Amino acid sequence: MWNENDALYYDYDVRNARVIRENTIAAFMPLYAGVAEDEPARRLVQNHLLDSAQYAPDLDNTKFRIPTASKSNRYFDPRGYWRGPIWVNLNWFLIQGLTRYGYHDLARQIREDTLALVESAGFHEYFDPRTGVGYGTDKFSWSAAFVIDLVEDGD
Image 1 (cartoon, rainbow, N blue to C red):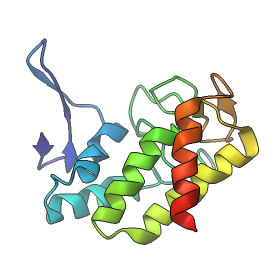
Image 2 (image 1 turned 90 degrees about the vertical axis):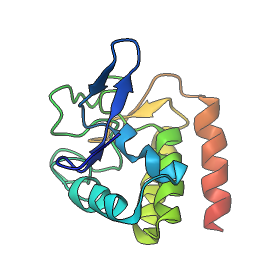
Image 3 (image 1 turned 135 degrees about the vertical axis):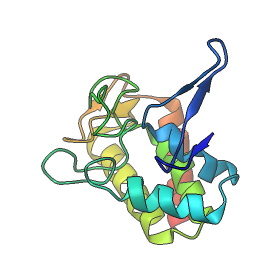
């Protein structure tokens, strides 16, 4: 589902037989799966993940990595469930994918941001990328499980 012009992987709506052309964290999941070739992976990281208008912190609008939708996405909502908040599980998948492709420093930064969110706000379902405030339940088991893995990997 690689789009050469946009340098993004897009989702596909099987029911309606159409590509969903939205810039979301799902674009990075081919890194976790190991199916991205090196050049598309490089473009994906350079053109999108490191861009402060999309996913990287900009200190004015977002301080933490990685929102579930690009800040440039028309549907971006930092508190809107899957439309912008940070989810520990998705950060974990992204960390694994970045490590696979040799982006160790960026993976470390995302790991540190993720652990900082949990340390300050607890094991919430999701977090506001601007403030770090946690939302949803504060005893979310998959957040806890992924944090255990992140802590063990950092030792």
